[in-house]
Image 1 (cartoon, one colour):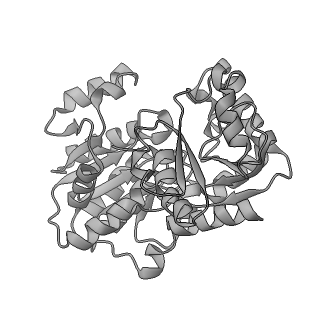
Image 2 (cartoon, rainbow, N blue to C red):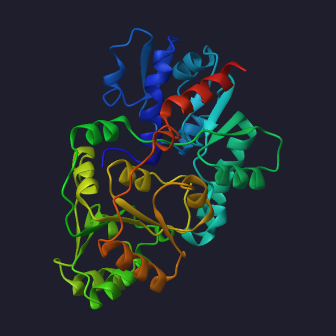
Amino acid sequence: MDASGVGVYLRGILPFFIKSGQEIFLLGDAGKLQAFCSNSNVKIINCSIKPFSIKELFFFPKKILNQINKADTYYSPFFNIPGGIETPVFTTIHDIIFPDMPELTSTLGLKARMFFYHRCFRLSKKIFTVSGFSKSRIEHYSRSKRPVIVTYSAIQPQFLDFRAKRKNINKNETVLFIGNIKKHKGLDYLLEAFLLAKKEGLPHKLIIIGDRENFRSIDSEFLRRIDNAGSEAVSFTGYISDEQLMEYVSSAALLVQPSLYEGFCLPPLEALVLGTHALVSDIPVLKEIYSGFPLSFFRATDVINLKDKMLEILSGKAPLPILQDNQLSKYTFEKTATIIMGEFAA
C-alpha cells in the first residue's frame, strides 16, 4: 500500500493546509513532495534525516532550523520533534500503544519511546490525536494541562471516487485482513477462527493484504499454520497499490479487523464506503469510532465468537452495508484540517 496510517492522515490534511493560502514549508524527501510544488505558496525543504535519530535530536542542520524558526508554527504529524526548534510546536500523536501494551517492545525500547512521548508532551504547545480513546490515554500518561484535541482520521477521497465510479461490484468468496505483523492487530485470532470456520464448511478464502516477507518475524508456528492451510485457503497479496487495495476491498465478502488496540482504524470505514461488510473487535476505540455504523462487532480475543459471527455474515442473509449521508460526512479531512489550522491561530 502507498501510505501508512500517519501517511494517509498527512496526505489527507495537506491539500487543505495548502488551500488556506498560507505560506507553507514542507520538510522531507523532495522527490516524494514534488506533487505539491505546483502551488505558489508551498516551498520544499529537502531533508533526509531519520526520525527519532540522534542526528534529529542533537545535530539537526542549522540552515534548516533557521528556516523553521522564522515560521509562525511548526507542525509534526507524528511525535518526533527535531532539536533546536524555537517556534511554537504542534504535534499529532495517533496512539500511545507502547506503554499500554509493553509486551510489544523490549524494556529498552519502551524507555526510548517514553522518552520521545514525554519530550513531545513537554515541547508541544498543543497535541492533536485521532480519537477520544487516544486523547484519554495521552492525558493519562502526560499528566499535564497541555491541550489534547481530537482530530479524527478520515476516508481518502479516492475511495469516494472509486465508490462513485464502480457501482454494483460482484462480491467474491474472500475474507480480507488489512494490518501488520504486530500482536495488537489480532491476526492470530482471525486465523484460528477462520480455520475453524473452514472445518464447518466455509468456502471462502482469507486474503492477507501485505507481503509474506514482512510477516517472517511472526512466530514461526503462525506461518506454519498458514502453509498447512494451503494457498487456496489463505494467501498474501504482496505489495499492492491503493488502486489494487480498493479492488480487493470492494470485491471482498467481508473485512475482519480483529485488533486488540488502535488509535482510529481506517480499514472498516474503507470497507463500508465500498459496500463491503466489516466485522470488528469490540475494543473501546472501535466502539467509539463506529458507533451507529452498519457493521458488526465480536468479542475481542474470543475465537469462537469471531468464527460464529463470520459464518453468520457470510451465510448471505445480511444485506450489504449502506452508509447514510451523515455517516459519510462524520469523518472528513477537511474537518480535521480546519480544526488543526484553527488551533494554530488561536
